[in-house]
Length: 306
Image (cartoon, rainbow, N blue to C red):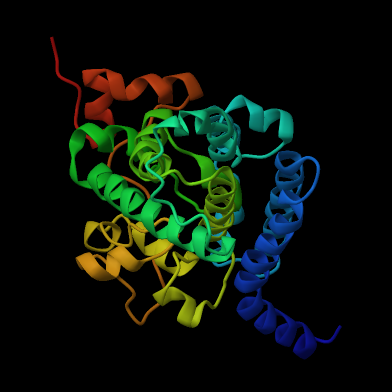
């Protein structure tokens, strides 16, 4: 392939990679959910999408530096496995815990109030679920940035100095439980069926790996609807004027409504991370937010003497 042809291919890939991964991923999920083993099928589809993005990161990286190892890969994977549930380890995936939890907790639907529009086509039910869940996800995320008690857990996610597809699931388990509570309990109480939780999990899964991938994607109009890599890089900026924005996990509706949408006409930040320091080991990262010295370390403060 000539240099001009290679450049043209990369240009096209930059524009097509986001919609291809997202919409083809959801198409795969459609067939996976209709199979005899929906969880395993979805896990395989998701793993394929992760592998694809891992390869595309090496073809059109947004930031060359982020291709270098940071020594945190094992910790990133460990947090993903712990946060999402051990069932994902068996399924070789990192995003099916919401679906698994829905299967276990749906019997609580004896409390159903029959408010869910179950007669709607699944496309509209899933879209409604994404919006309802997003309200909780938005406020859980924003609170985690604005309240110290929650930031001590959320800081683990922001401690990364590079974004790539593998650290998508780097969350403290307390942080994840807080988000799940605010986003999914309303759906349980409304009586949303199991399949709705599957689709919510699928949307969140594919948006998650896309927002964190180190791919030079051109997302254009998608930036005004979905949480995209461009918007999420701003959210990870060390500059809090940039970082305390774009809280949306899947869509940016509530960022638009509550004035936290940020998308200036310039390349998004590569200067990411936090002021403080996160402990180096997996277990230490889990326990750090529960000690006074650990919290001071997270905040970038010197430990108290004596």
